[in-house]
Image 1: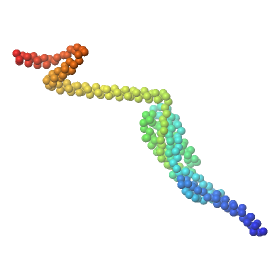
Image 2 (image 1 turned 180 degrees about the horizontal axis):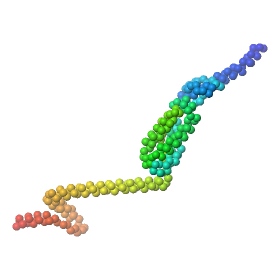
Image 3 (image 1 turned 60 degrees about the vertical axis):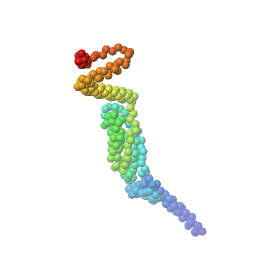
Image 4 (image 1 turned 180 degrees about the vertical axis):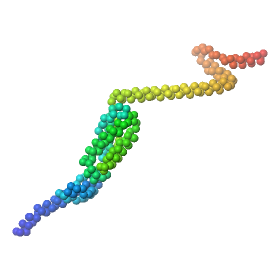
Length: 256
């Protein structure tokens, strides 16, 4: 009778011990780390794999070390040339120091999101609209460097920042379209003027060459007469140069 009473009394104790052992066993994946606190004080960073946490004495906070893709909501930004735009971006970051990510900041995800929003507004507000549209790579680098420097104390590494959209209102879109059209017209006029300048330069050089050789001038007139003679639909009065007439008279006098 006594052995039965002892086994019956040990069963709850064994069950409790087994429950404590099971509760103390934690499994962390390869990309996870556990920040362990003993009686409220930081103890160690453990993982990955099987670790033991003493229930009641120790607490563990899981930290994911994978890259986090965080979408930054659209921010109202006023550029340096006083243009109001809406800009959104995406931030890629990861935890490199689990201890600081848990101890130094209450919620590192929320803190990084808020910091990314304010930094995006501050950096883009220093640039003009044309720079926002044409120099995104440089702006991405500027925002990334500022975020990385400020989140370093939290044990976070900001790997990349990408500006996704720069949204303009309809009036600004129309103004940019008019500006682009005016720029195209300006370039067309410049190209036309350059062509006229080159043509005039070529004509000047040709005139100088012909003026140095009267025979060449005569040949050019004769060639022009031949070209005009092929057109029978109109009557053309073609001036004959005095040099050519003088040459013809001289030859006729010699023949006499």
